[in-house]
Image 1 (cartoon, rainbow, N blue to C red):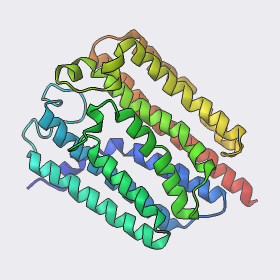
Image 2: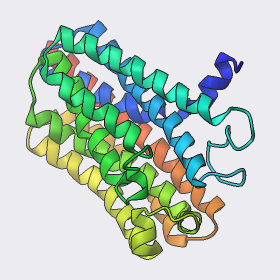
Image 3: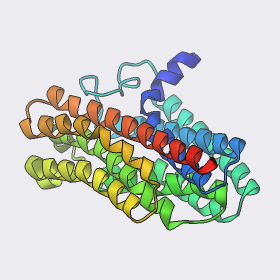
Image 4: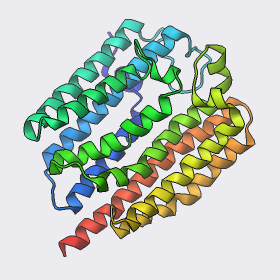
Length: 299
């Protein structure tokens, strides 16, 4: 029986910043608006990570079934292909994680409002159907859209809602920079895998529009994050200290250069690594800015 360390590694914990950051931003924005309950914030965080882990496990299972992952594939998958875990074990782990996230979600519904139920249900379904039967959204060039919506507005607004019990335009606008950058992570992955995805019939935006246009999409996602940040502050959705996140702009430039240079997938893999790092750094610095705003407001 696989041990806890093995299951932890198979869950791809390094990717969890993509679900932690939006919850952190939504929670801190709620605190800035005067609403914060620590245990609700922790539950929201654990619930989002559980659903994220479930999505990762299910993604590995169905990518293996469809032949999208192999021993030679770049990236963190391979536990099934190398015989470390059996496919049914990985699928079961995904279901366990989705169940855990759903139970946490029901506790939050009890603590807040029945309105949250529908958002949570949609998040679980999106996580499973991302590669799961019967939709396989990632194979229909809907991966970027799904990630943009659910790891941007849905997570930020959900974290804000469980604190305030209101759906706010401010939370939506604050989510957009995060949504652009988390989508950039997936898009970098898809740019890297254009050729291998085409070989197995996996349709992504990158395979459909080609490498040159896919590069321009990446430039748009990176620029969009910073433009949305400035717009959110200008409209009053975010406090002015949030602009501190602009200091991460230099970290976005190498990503664009790597994509523009092209090359083999191993070189392009660095764009994926740097995109994940940028999302984390941007989110943490933005959170620091929100924390500063909360402290200033308390003076």
